[in-house]
Length: 139
Image 1 (tube, rainbow, N blue to C red):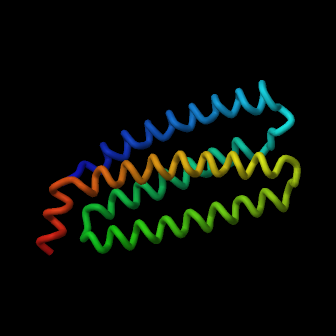
Image 2: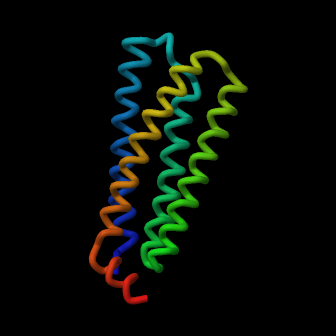
């Protein structure tokens, strides 16, 4: 069986490393190179995506202990929920402030892409483990 807590802790540490790197890149871009493009919602956006990613990853890891079909359903459900919640977040920001909305959306897309690729690779790595495949083929 997979040690879900250990795997999640490792994922969370790496997610915070990615977040720190994105903050560093954002600082360079939005405070040194082009400060006029900064939107106050950008730091909140990063924290929001990080929190949603950690929550969904934890739930998806726990679903790996169940049948493969349950995992697929949970994976699809969380992917849909995340996309809808991100759309709502972007819409709320757009309604509150129109200043630098294009750089905000572009930044959101980059952060979304980084965390989605990272999370998907992590889930795929553990879903391909022999115990997950063998366990689900016998049921």
